[in-house]
Image (tube, rainbow, N blue to C red):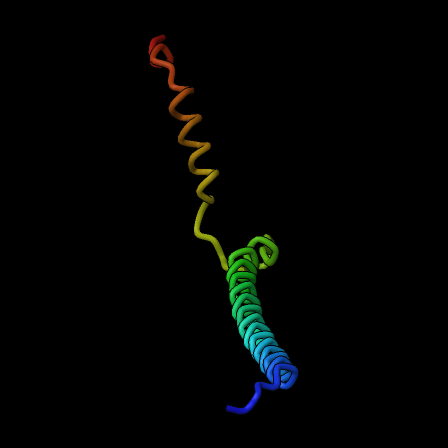
Amino acid sequence: MSPLNIAKIEQEARRLRAAEMQRIKGLMLARLGLYFRLLAGSILSAVAVLAESVRPLFSWNPQANTAVRQGPGLLTRLSLAGRALFSWNPQADRS
């Protein structure tokens, strides 16, 4: 039997351990990069949905409607109906 060279075995073990640590570090960085890309894509799509839902609130222009209206508007009709309902006087016909 030949004698064991302990120093050479320890040196090889350290080299293999360092290589494995570098491999694990590379895997973690690759997975972290993928995670952040997926997270950024999700955030951007959420911001796009939010922007599309908020856009009508900021783009409304009350003077943009140039269509010709037929008769009074809805609020005017409701107001006239409310006035007619509460202004009815049953004694107005008596004289």
